[in-house]
Length: 467
Length: 73
Image (tube, each protein chain N blue to C red):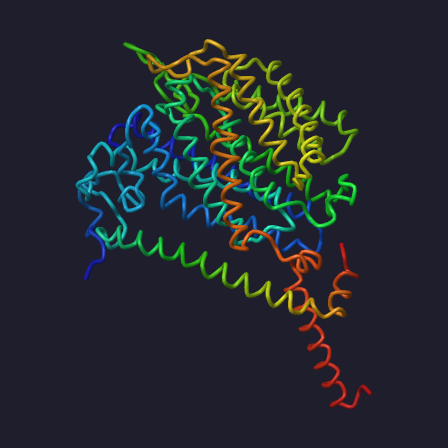
């Protein structure tokens, strides 16, 4: 940090990620508003707190083991090598705290470690942590109005600090085995964040079951409409806004991309391959527009599905939005959400799955299909600037999508929900679900109000101004 | 007494590594966090189960249940 250009690069990068974290915070605000708006009045506080507490639960677990997993598992382990040493990401590392980047205190670290990570570890950690909150929050919405908070927070720790970060290590780390061997390309996390969260949610939903009253005796579904559509729409607008930060956080802002001799600084995607903020801005907005345009028509102007369609459009195009032409991004964003929408209702009717906010469709199906589409459209592109890695192919990305949605998402979700259910920890008791999840607070408030009213009456009587 | 390793900001900055107090106790702090995290879940699950048992007990009273259902929204 004693040469100005190099110092500016480090300090700019530190500031860049810090800003993305602040913007991404809006995703969580949006998810909270969206879920509360989608839930019935009798469940509002429970719904709000269930998602709010994702923040501390996932933060603590991501500090304890999530961050280390990302750097330790790119080889599987056991697929392309063993565990990778990541002393800077261990929770007891001095680099997981306030550090000036000078001489290391611990013998496990080198001076290069401290110089590299002292100013970047916290902001990188936080950027990935916000992705973790998002992954857990996606699961949250689908389960509203009948899942126990305690069960959900255990799921949040599992999906937010173990499962998604394992797939990120495999398919998002520049040296991940899926990138090396499959040519897996998923620049803005269609599969890495969205497909896994959707798959996990579907697995949990199959065990959790629908809300009471969702299905008629003959098995046809009823609509449980959002209690507050305005809160839902503001929530989704905030998620759109936070998504900008998400896109920026998936890039490296300044990197020398010139192979061999010479220097050329550019932004890169997460695989250190060239892209630019300008390119991804084109594609983000075009994909968003595609989703909004088609889903408005398909859903006959339904606000919930139109907004979700915009989000689904971005998610569908995200895998290749570092490289697509904007019109390609728009077409993907227009078509894939329609398929996911149809799938949502087919799965609902066929398997009696009650996904309260369409999370499996918007995130899971769109994420899965988005990865598959990227495999076709980016066929033959290098997956990484590193020589010797596989190129992107339809089958490589398809296998990757299966790993994300089914292997690391659906199967663990199903098994974990079964275990929680076996211990009677998964679902709210039926009487409480019928009465509303806030019944405890409401009855208590009613009793307190009655007591206050009584004491006021007695006071008035003692003053002789009331009978 | 000094809790950290920094006695002055006047020295060579590149000599400064970890800046927080009690350097060397990171493993203990990690264990404290681990216990805090696990303990929180255990406590929360117990409290939640107890509250649901109490709620179910209250809701066995038909008058209470009817009053609550009348507010359905």
